[in-house]
Amino acid sequence: MLLTARPEGAGFGKTSVGWQAQARCSDEAIASVQPLFDVMGKTTWRLGADQRMAHVAKIAGNLMITQAIESMAEATALTEAYGLSAEVFLGVVTQTMFASPSYQRYARNIAHASYEPGFKLFLGLKDVNLARDAAESAALELPAMSVVRESLSRAASAGLGNEDWSALAKVVRGEVSGESATVTDECGVRGAGRAAVPPRPLVRDDRPG
Picture 1 (tube, one colour):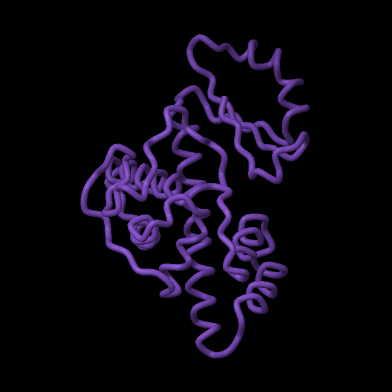
Picture 2 (tube, rainbow, N blue to C red):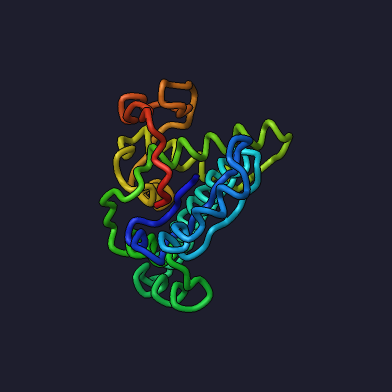
């Protein structure tokens, strides 16, 4: 079973639950515990018998969040260059065209330059690297992924690995500089600044930011 939730939404009735049925787990067995899933979360998504489906869904979802953060960082760099503050601009767009929890949460971080870790940047970079590897295996080119991976790599090499992954905005907005990825370390992160990135945890932290 894969359980996903944003930290502030991890209460009963707010969590989405996705599960993968392996060969030893029958549809009947899943049906028998479905009432528990209904209590634990708002929606149960059945992702199929192939366990890769759950993994790629999680990686792709986190990739989308990093791209949302990147886009807000770039957009606010543009608005601030013309005198429109990040707080005002992001307040407008996150209550209209981008009125979603991910945009709203990370907009607050960027607007207030506050990056207390929810989902740490080094974990975001790890997932983006996994997305890159999956894309390469499928012979896909994902240009936006390459852009956000560059920002995350530079942020990690600048010592921001333990800050919230929205701290990649510091790189986009020119507040810090860092070097691109060049080597693979024990964390699965290809990049300079190995010391800035904590070791890979033995148990995967599957909570999105």
